[in-house]
Image 1 (tube, helix red, strand yellow):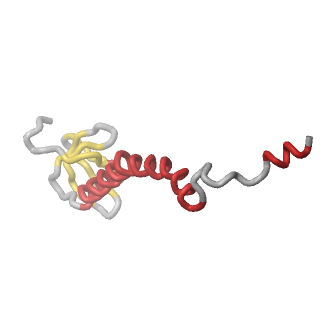
Image 2 (spheres, rainbow, N blue to C red):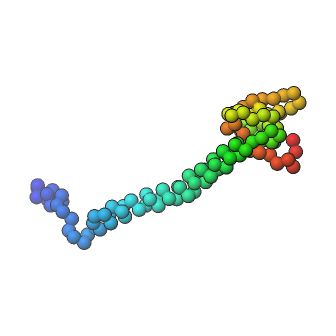
Length: 111
């Protein structure tokens, strides 16, 4: 009875499985491929969009037409270090964080 258990726990015969580092690499190869796919399809494009958004926020100036993340259309009245004051109607101004500016509008778009 114990002989069959000991035989089952014994060393693998040579030539059965790839051994050593090659076998370890081959077992991790699918994970490496999946990570590469996620990097090029998800992570890298997100980093690119974040960089473009950061550059857009840094280049804001008075008179730019913008859209906020909440969907408010306005014109930049003043730009602070961390805040932006938008004019959204006659005699109506709001102050919000720079991160909440979603996009610049082209001057050809209607209000």
